[in-house]
Length: 391
Image 1 (cartoon, helix red, strand yellow):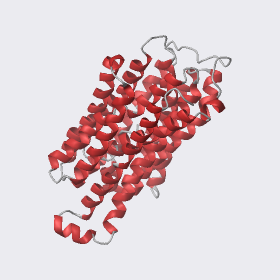
Image 2 (cartoon, one colour; image 1 turned 180 degrees about the vertical axis):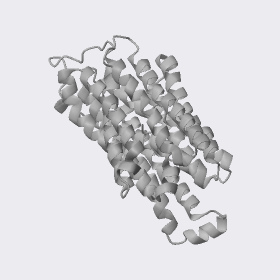
Image 3 (cartoon, rainbow, N blue to C red; image 1 turned 90 degrees about the vertical axis):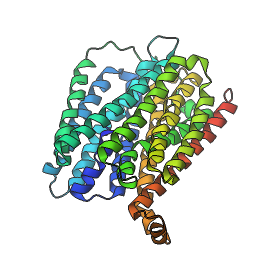
Image 4 (cartoon, rainbow, N blue to C red; image 1 turned 60 degrees about the horizontal axis):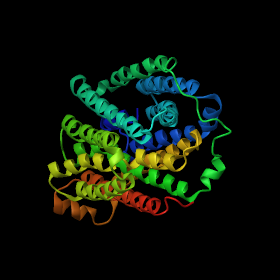
């Protein structure tokens, strides 16, 4: 769901005249809704179990996608309002899925929970690859004005999953008598820093993921089908490959060390994408950022789950909320800088000197600011490494 909207950024901008900040705000709405849902439902999940909420999650996703598709017809005078409302609805489903899938996998009896978690999150990336490629080619063949029917087609998936999750066996959550209290958890410094790590890790991942499509088309002047297939899809593929590799070889490597290395590499790649004038190299930097950020989100979950094995769904809810905050603020800030940078004094002379358009300068400036996110994530991960056994 969240990976579908950015592919439609340019078609929506062309059809309705939305600003880049408005488009980025849709991402903020998405992740803000997920944060609220994560926090609101964590206690209920621990009390009533996984099944009713995982089924409801797919119901919200189905309804939200259909509302998104028909928003211009239902809200002809205010299409952005309709799209924003639809985003709230399907994001409620996304928030429940985010809250539930990690503890569901963590509750499966196995000695390789970290590997299982990495594989679970790799399927987010494979889903992103699928959504990007199929949506991009559908827009190419059907035309950008037919985006509504592409969204309707994607609504088939939550419709199917709604029935599948009503039957699949699910392990019960951790019993209340054994569960670590949420109050004790949030008073632990390690947990607070872990939340910050996933926040800025989410910002680093989604800041690039959500803007690679627009950056490739507008800043690098690539055809949309090329930018999405060679940029966004390969970014997602690198994201998935990084997580799958950890799922396979995770027992042999130091997760914290690999995450720190990835954070530094991601910051370098943000700067490279923003400043290198060679389009192919800039696009390659965007792609490789997928590998660099691949473990920042799931890795933070793994480290925290290992540190607090009896925390229950509440821990996953707060961690997911932290990731969602980062994943909303990151893309929004990139979009805001993209809109604001061309208005700064001296940009006109820069445009004249480089031959770039104001919009291209703005997009590059947005990615340059995004380099801050993985640097802060690195600092958090370094602290977690040094205070592994302390409160």
